[in-house]
Length: 463
Image (tube, rainbow, N blue to C red):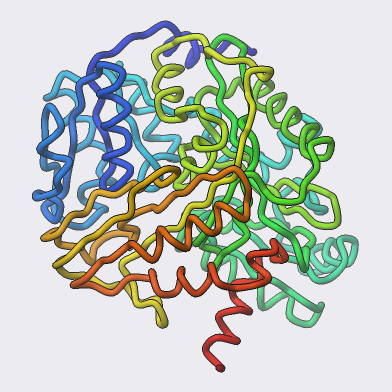
């Protein structure tokens, strides 16, 4: 692993107090891992989250700003001040908010704290889709056809690139993410309008108009490979997930492992991901995202953080990813090798959102009744309770329902029962939608791709 000043600063450092720079279910998840490791926690909140239940279980609970995320959870100075006031030695960003912000990771390290995540340089490399693709190609990771450079301004050159790739193509913001900043172009006469619209969207959303172009795959699955790396040249991949069930590029249901992919096909890709991590000196957890079509993998991006769907990999691999993430941030040597990783059974995760099950419009309000399922192979990650007030200011995710069973069919049956036993009243949720989805035949057979859910929803509305 290349030696850098960032690695030298973090390696071998210890801390006993962690600021959890996030909210909701992931704040609860991180707090639990810290307690198990004997670490003190500092929970932060906005004005809207003053009554958050995880505040009472933290060692310290500090309000850092108004309800607006821009003035609280995205306020870097306020978070660093909270860490200094609490005497913390590290900051865990969770997912979303500042978790993939290279400038924040750098500011944390410069403040003499440990950022529980990759170094700023790794985040910067992988956060820009063009430099990420270049790094992956150098490491032998298969990529979607298309140049590893930004699109020029010259219209004729752009037309030539599109013809070389072959229509349909997809235009993407180099600094994009979360399903934003992308457009599919099915034919040449729509190209320049798509370029102009996406450039402006990228400029407004990500602060940069830089775009790139790739081949648009028409029936792919979305496959992820989870990795974890330490500061001592060790890296492993923890199996794979299928996240194809998406609505407007947002994941709804995830599962591990991805069904129907033979070990001899996935293993070389996993090892290439590990090699890529070693080449860029990656530290912490991360996820490589691929499109998979006709037996071939194509890299699309890397998430340099803990992901919402990490529990399905925890359930199948038996590895506590959050604890391992904190351990490598402390400078510990990774306590498992690739030979130790064995993935067993099958796991599903449903994202339970406070939103209308038909329109998907967010639903704020007070939870008047809550009943959650329990039993073998069932896990619920949540921060809500009866009487909890769901805020309109943040993401609508209120819980994650996870199941594990020996086979995919058994895991689907277990999820159906778990969803039947989940009751949330006082607000609207997507639970009826999830129940209907788990009764769908093609989904049960694994006959889906990333476009399937949108098509299923259209047919459901028309019925």
